[in-house]
Length: 168
Image 1 (tube, one colour):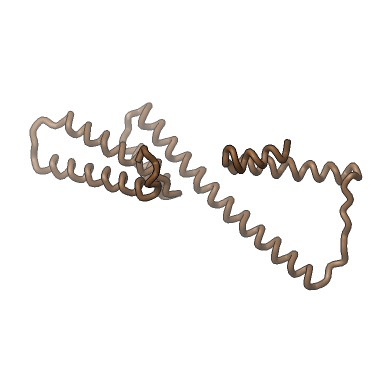
Image 2 (cartoon, rainbow, N blue to C red; image 1 turned 60 degrees about the vertical axis):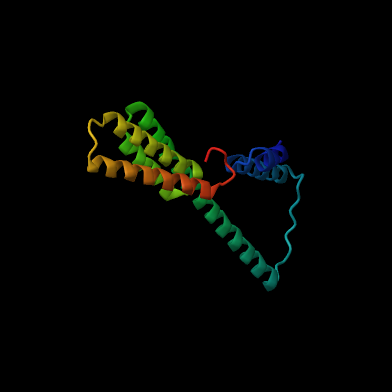
């Protein structure tokens, strides 16, 4: 089951929580084998050279785990802000607050879905501007231009991040 979880986490559904769950269950399995006496751990006397290699290896593994954890947390926080933007937009129809949350998500990690969401918010702002417009003046034209530029820029950034995604 442990091996299946690790393989599924790597191949079928690439997901960090599934991989961590698989590795944790594998570690618990090894601990249980050692406690039952099935797995025997032999300790060799370490030479200074092997001790140094072991310390450097543990340092590299620790650094990689720290970097991976930071990346995972930034991505998770970005997803949280983006989901919050969606909820605010759907429940309160508050475009300004939703835009703030999307920009916070983008500040955490640059993903094409965040830029696509920002472009869609620009389209919503353009629609609201056009429906509320009674007479055309220079201020409304400038506002429309700024919304268009913002939407186009966001869409271009989404395409730049993932040019193969058909939704961009």
